[in-house]
Image (cartoon, rainbow, N blue to C red; front, side, top):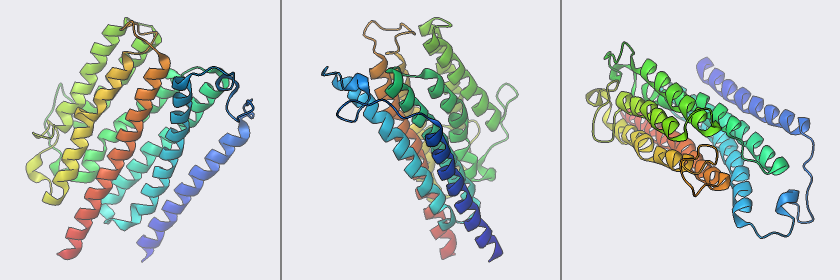
Length: 288
């Protein structure tokens, strides 16, 4: 009883902290200048630029959707067995962190009409490793192997891969290195994460499918689908970065639209499938 009460209190405190943090953020930012239609000035100058409007809209939807998902995951944390509550907490952290960064990215775009890659990469450098950590929290430590790759275990491979992927991606998008080189080297980090977590068709270097509970296999493979297929949208978006110069058909707005869609699908979807697996496993434990 005490444990259940503590868990509920923890969930409420995290939700309250998130709410207060948003309130503090809102109060610390000067109101945006608006046109007659209530939108930022550069969207109210009479120029018919649907792409700019869609970009602004998706930044707005991004932080609202991530914030709502944070509340949902924290609210559902106590509906799963204790061993799966860490999974729910990680899911909430991922979308909660993203909600903050999307709030600021929307602010930069509304104030200056600029797409911020700095806030984007600050978000990714935190949330991508957390997404990989979903695997041990969901499938259990017994399903995580002791296999090493260059002396690194599962966590080491995932974190190193995330740093390589995000680090070289930022260097390429910021123009610090050649855009194509940044894309290729960043892809190496992505491949490292796939090697560790596996694919929908095979075990990973760090995950043994034979030791995953049957009721969790669907969710585990769904997470792999997100990494192997869902993350493909990111390098496509990268191609449209004007600074990277990978393609002639570049547009910061197109890049932002693709990134925003990918983030909403992958971050929230990642949490949803993990929640579904945790609920199914909890029902199986209750039936024993």
